[in-house]
Image (cartoon, rainbow, N blue to C red; front, side, top):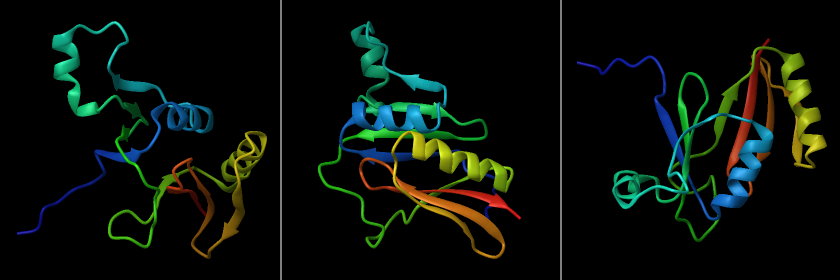
Length: 137
């Protein structure tokens, strides 16, 4: 019997520097924080949230995206594991606006591409993790 799923619950990305990564993800996406250790947390709360490793979990609406700051190397999509993470936008005009936003933030990207079935915009986070925005035609 197959396991039937209908969406992704959450993805957690391993990063090297939480301050740098949070600055990037906050400025690019502006997602609300779903979970983090409060700065004034007592020891019991810190223990209960130790699975965050000092990171953060964002609520992106239909799923959660977490940042786990424990890495000491950089991302390589040619290793076993994640190739890239793609987020859906509603239209090409949203992709065009996203490209302009990345330009304003001085974040390098490959420009909007028409790949036949959709439009995509590829860029990377500070740890070189490959990110993509995709919009249907």
